[in-house]
Length: 333
Length: 179
View 1: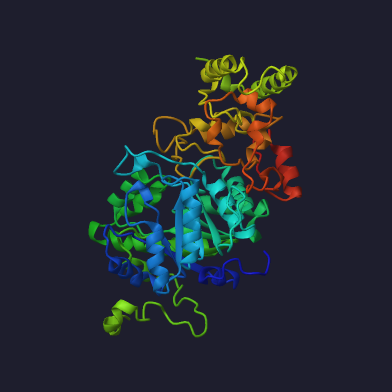
View 2: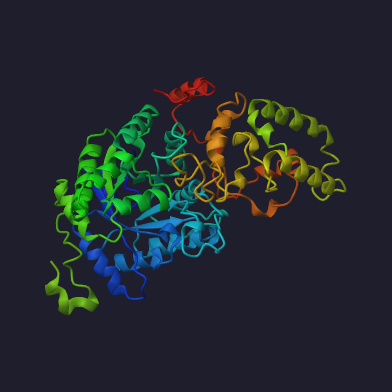
């Protein structure tokens, strides 16, 4: 990888310094109150190097990812702006990329997006004007060549660290490493994977990725997360697109008394983190804890990934008083 | 319904090859806006519709996608399967149907001529060509026109030359991945 920083955000610096990165995702509020975003960010900020702002994941409407990113950068957090191809065409997406960069967003995750049929408004029109690879390529051209897809020049290039998703756990398995190769060629600097519950499959995937000579071309963060209960596991494997949970994991939760299932789910997650850390080419983890963000800190600490690296002189944004909150800043940790 | 023909991708790619060559001498008459265009559109719609469930995007890439129409993917993806494929290989959107990209991949490794083009990065779809005759667009290279800002992705190496050689060699062998 070349020596110049592509965007200069915290996530990029942590990854480039060779440290094991941790990212997490913010559950977007169904509200018009900025405080809801800050409250959700507060429990994540000290324990991770970047916070994903999801773009209507599962095709459910929430506060938009670009707005969440704007709020987060204002308070000094490091957001990862997720852009899905489902809802917006190429004109809207390119404009939003510029706007996000102008607001200080340094990381973008380019994804296809769950289909509208997964959400609560399945009658909506699907857009999918771009696919994720075309989106990545376009974002990269805006950053490196300084122009829109049409060829029209930008006066200032957006500085963006470009991410893509990968799902090693669904068919066609032989193709998945090659798909990663395509995403890297299209412009991916980092990868965040789908939930990993099958470390054996991941190991196999990473071996093939290594065989294709891709490990030094991209930073790979493995998606992990705690299962709240056996029921939650069942829901996720049947209702959430792309999530595969092996029977052994569900069986392990099944054998656990109901009241302890939450702890067991957390334990499984920590074990998976410890196992994936040992795999060559894994540069970090992406901890997703839908509606149980408070667990993220516990998991990261239990996995031995706390405290997170900070630049010298950099204070934690959570303890930095925000303009509106100055009076309450004594409450923050 | 002639969908079963899709299970012979190696034969289809030969037909594609011959067909492209046989159209070339008629370039002068087969032009966009020519009197023959409606007829070509009709033949394409009926013929390719029966075999491939063609959606008339006007910029056919069948030979690069395992002789499987990428526009039949509910997400209209052009560059391979999304991450929503079900564990049994079925589509995220239609749980009872196989993912067309899983089929496309399996077919493409049965295609010695064009199968490797599965690795190509396809540019964004030119929506203006929807409903036009891709055969006419093909012989006049209209379907190859790209937006000015799109750096031609055909030239980008997806993997290093060394590895590529090995992948190409194994393309039609049962286990094609380098290991």
